Length: 310
Image 1 (spheres, rainbow, N blue to C red):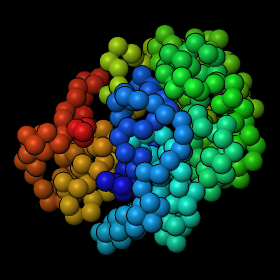
Image 2 (cartoon, rainbow, N blue to C red):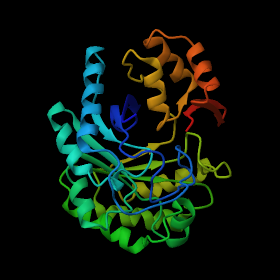
Image 3 (cartoon, one colour):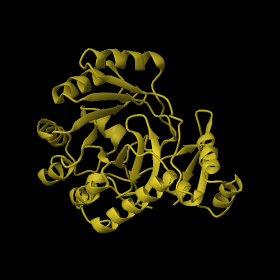
């Protein structure tokens, strides 16, 4: 499904997701990825959906949600892979402009060394660029990049994008225990991000099921230390340390809503129950989707999450 949600977002309010990359085409295979590991990484942008097809799907979803009086704050490219691998990203952004909703893109920043990728991404109103580490070892261990990628080249590309982008620029740094949460790693990352002058810098820990189960969020002391370091460099630092609840948008079709959201965004049991209720559906639908091997449950940090099975 191309369009899903809206999803309650800690950064973007009610965010209608746009899945412009099928599972799972990405330049990274991050250990904490909520979509799962990348079987084969790639770095060359290509066609996944015709931009007209994508725009039509988003338009149809927006119209269905508006008929249900659902609020939409952002149209957000947050797919099953890296959104800038879509060669038509810029065209798609322009085609959904008439809907009158701000457009956001959440990217890992790994392809911003390509001028054409920077130009496509610059058409968005709000962009989040992920920078988990600026040192080779933690970057390689946490992001597990495509072998062709060069960290220095990536960082330079991010600098160039930040210096020219006229919209709202956010950065996100995900901390993983024992990899990028050391004082040295955090300090170097903070110094790099400060040079970008982002509108907001987000410091995060994994709150949803991860691609690799042997990795964990840093302890409280390490996170507080990292937050303190970030605070010396930025006026606007925000923490993403808790799984957000909230109100997932309902279109009237519970199965479509549930499978669309969980293909990209794991949902807690409580959130699933609320979505079912809004659609006038019962828990039997979840049991049916599990029996049909379209949905699976995963335990993480004492909570049950539901994830789309591919």
